Amino acid sequence: MTGRDAVREHVAEVLGQPAGSLDDHEDLLDRGVDSIRLMHLVERLRESGVDAEFVDLAETPTIAAWADLAGRRARA
Amino acid sequence: MTGDERFDVVVLGGGPAGSSVATLVARRGHSVLLLEKERFPRYRIGESLLPATVHGLCRLLEVEDEVAGAGFQVKRGGTFRWGAGKEPWNFLFAVSPRLAGPSSHAYQVDRMEFDRILLRNAARHGVDVREECPATGVLRDEDGRVRGVRYADRGVAGTVRARYVVDASGSTGRLWTAIGGSRHYSDFFRNIAVFGYFHGGKRLPGPDRGNILCAAFDEGWCWYIPLSDELTSVGAVVDHSRASAVQADRVQAFLDLVGRCDIVSDHLADATRVTEGVHGQVRVRKDYSYATDRFHADGMLLVGDAACFVDPVFSTGVHLATYGALLAARSINSVLSGDLPEAIAMAEFEGRYRREYSVFHEFLTAFYDVQQHEDTYFWQARKATGIGDTDLEAFATLVGGMASGDTGLAAARRRLVTAGHELSAGIAATGPAQTPSGERMATLFRTPVVREVMTEGSRIQAGGVPGRPLLPGGLVPSADELGWATVG
Image (cartoon, rainbow over all chains, first blue to last red; front, top):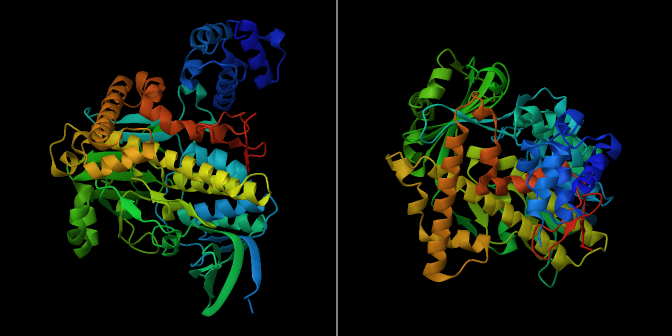
């Protein structure tokens, strides 16, 4: 539900880029994620049951890191 | 001859709150009359803005590009000589340097020009804007509901009827009392401000040149706002007990106070005070924080300084005012369109507005508490540990869900003291301006009291976000962000 594939789908939609083009470990700020898009991603993750924080996503902007975070912060 | 005029909504006051609520209601196709007692442009203080206003609110007003093109000084945050350290530190809107794009900027604005842009924009959106038309009283129907206002148009009395009256006439308006509540002043923030303008003041280095600088000194604190390369707005905020001494000789009192605030005094070493024109006066105003105990009743809503005001050290004035305006417009639009019952729509307006006021109030109490090492009268009286019971009760009521009586007051005090400690720790960990750690805001943004004040601003700025309700069981913004929708 909130594994790497799910996170990659969210990122792809917010960026308007194909999910297949996103590497799990690349820096998403280089791919066009800015503060507004980060806010959208926070909302999307929260809607899927993850207590995501803007600051956490901003500090480690990779799909791998966000998927780890989503696993830790998933609401029961 | 104007006795039969009817509008969906009448707005009193053409400042940012009034212009915003009028424009956002007109955008849904409703008829709006805006009555402004003065002729624009007119002077106002409150020059430093936050990103939620210049991006989120201005986007919804469809005036973002015009504001961006007006040549206002870009501001990437605030610089503070405040707290235990001697070096200034930064509160930047961008969490890290790599996220410091245009969406993380705000502006320092000449309010004569900024307010004029927003008022003209209201007229462009179909609002009937009438300047030099002060409202003089409210009209009620037989049930006591507010149904319109009386006003004076160049000495000629007129009446206008409306489904809603929105009072955005500022802190000096009189009609807010029609709502039937009273205004509660905080003892903690009973400050006065004395302020003027300088030419040729120095600028902070590099990317901080557009920042507001706020600096504590023994008797209070000073603001230093670069409005352009040449012009600087400077003010001193001191205890209310000094009001009569300050009033006795404003200019001398102003220069003396500013002279005792080292960093501001250094920045003004080669500057000259403006003595002519609209910036040539030294002005004094109360900076008391207050909230009216209700923001709406029976056909009338309060927004902006008519509803509440909170200490200006964090540049919150225009944000809080226009946020209230956005909420009011959403609630009015939702009732006028028949989407929601009035009671539910107005509860969302009141609940969200009060929440925003209370989170800023809590943040600012913590912010003053950061100066707790100071042992002067001004700072002794502004420690969270010594906050009075009346203020604590008001705080506990605002926050809600706290126990009553002594237990509740003790809990409220503990919460404010903790917030102060956490904020101090966050500032210490961030370190001085323009150092590697001082350019990164993650630690500060994680401080609970900071996270709270940024929540709604970020959401408004992001726009179009699929929201969960902010309030338990509450509403979410509609798809066009101009009304409310129920969840699910």
